[in-house]
Image (cartoon, rainbow, N blue to C red; front, side, top):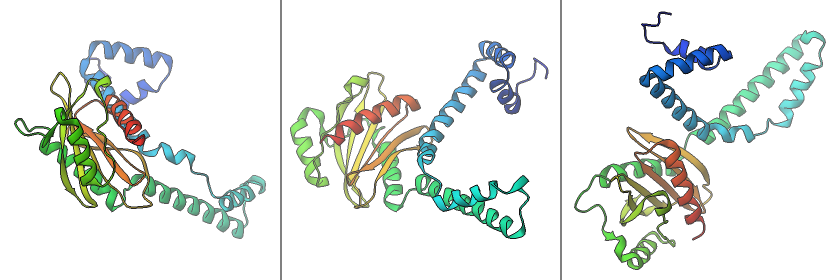
Length: 256
C-alpha cells in the first residue's frame, strides 16, 4: 500500500484490530490525516448505536431444550453423528437461530405504537426546532401554566425535565396530535443555539421499551416507553452527549 494513496476500509480495519505495530502505524496515520480520524469517529458512533440496539440480546438465555440437544451432540465421539443425531443437531442449531432471530426482531423492530413515537418525534423536531418566531405555544416563563396544560392534555403528570446542568434551558412547549391521543412537545436550547425536542405521548398498556436509538439525517435521538408513557429526545448532537441528556430526562420523568 503506497503512503500516497488513501487507505481503504479493509486496510484500516486490519490496522485498528491488528498487532501493536499495526496500531502504532495507525496512530501515525491518524496524527497526519484529520479525515481518517473522522472516519474512525463515525465508526465509533455507529458501534455505539449498534450496542444500544443489540446489547440487550446478550441477556437472553438459550432455551434449555436447545442446550440439552447441543450437549447430547457434543458428547458424541468426534462429533461423528449417526443420521438421527445429525438431524437432531441440525434442528437444534436451526431452532437456536430461529429463537435468536425472534429475540432480535423483538428488540430491533418496534411495534406500531413505538414506530409512531420515533417517527412523530423526529417530525416534530424537524418542524419546530427551526422555527424562529413561534417555536412553542406556551413559553417557559409561564412554567406553572405550561406544566398544568401539558399534563391535562396528555392525561398524565408532565413536568418538563431540567436539562440546564447539561447546558440546555427550556424554551417552552406545545401540544400535538399523536396516534395514541395527544402528545406534549418541549423544546430546549443551549447558548450555541442548538435545540432539543422532548416528545412525550401516551403508550398502550403492556408496552415497555428500553432505550432505543433512532436517526434521520443529521438528527438523532433516544426513545423509550415506560409506565404507559412514550418519550423521545431528539437533536443534532453527538451520540454520547445526546445519550447523557436522554438519561437525565428519563430519570426526571420517571420520578413524576
